[in-house]
Image (tube, rainbow, N blue to C red):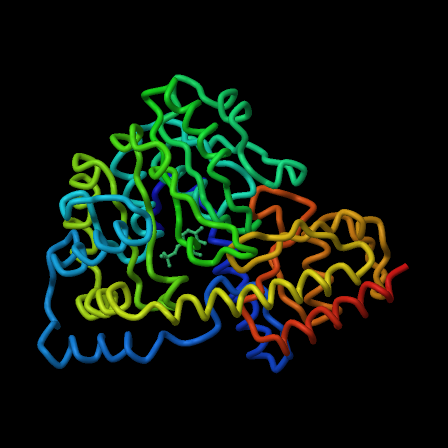
Amino acid sequence: CILFSERLASVKPSPSMAAKAKVDALRAQGRKVIDFTIGEPDFDTAPHIIEGGINALKSGQTRYTASAGTPALRAAIARKLERENQLSFRAEEIVVGCGAKHIIYNAFAASLNEGDEVIVPAPFWVSYPDMVALQAAKPVIVACSEESGFKLSADVLAKAITPRARWVILNTPNNPTGAVYTREELEAICDVLRAYPQVWLMTDEIYEHFVYNGVTHVSPLQIAPDLRERTLLVNGLSKAYAFTGWRIGYGAGPVELVKRINLLLTQSTTCASAMSQAAAVVALDGPQECVAEAAHLFESRRNRVMELIAKIPGLSCMQPDGAFYVFVNVQKLLGLKTVAGNVLQSDVDVMNFFIEQAGVAVIDGTSYGCPGFLRMSFATSMEEIEAGYAAIAQAVAACK
Ligand code: PLP
């Protein structure tokens, strides 16, 4: 018989990983697919950072490191938090993992008990609810409407908090919507949290460098230092430094939580790759032009994508202030009949229609807790963007 954990019954495969697998499978069949499902920068890690990794190997950094991360990397992260976020953390308040995902997973594993609740504003990054469910805890999904800019408001948060609530997770800039919380919005949220000392705040700031229109990223801890004893800041190098495959992320928070996350690391992964940690030091301490250039590139693509969407009847979109996705409202396409004779009844139908009739892969909003929308990444070349939206426009125009 096959062994399995009952907890797995509540876990779905990550929709973004599944989308990637689907694109790969279609391409293997020889189909041309324009991929707007991409959740990572479409360019390579900067050469000086790659060099840092190679130099680490050549100088013998080929062994296990301290499980919480090398002293050099934790010091570089502390410098980064001071320099970019004006936050002071000591090395023992920082833990390094194999990506931010790994840190979020282990933070939940280290802190949740059966029946505990985690408040997850929707639209949400696909992995949060499943990671919570894996701990036999309950994700409390709180809908944030397009009208509210897809952001959690203070009164909606206050209503969602029960005595079992342990965490609220905030992701700014947000995947999938690109929403960026303002200082005032964060102040209002932190004000609510002050009234509930049993609720911790997890802030996922992985897209912090990709903000547009002069919008600035604010870390909740900058405005609510009094919540520091119950806040875990999560970040990583994946997006900012096109570093996804190297797998480095980190958490910064209270020592007692960091110690427990580290305890899990000692019994599971041991440590993040030594080479990747050394390259991460080079990335964080080195020249930052590659990050600014990437942000600039994404902003120009975002501007073009907004123009292209405006020209397609039935599609509309809130302009994202950050990250590299548009979260497109497709509700006006529902009810249309495609040339294949199918009536579009949901965002999932529209997703399938786009791949089948336009050869464009996207991800349904339902996967992000928000039916009626699609997540469309612009972490791809301008040529693909032009070709993809032209193909969508043509497929939509052929509907009745
Ligand atoms: N958080 C959000 C909102 C993300 O979109 C992602 C990746 O897609 C992650 C965390 C995880 O990043 P990584 O594990 O590569 O650091």
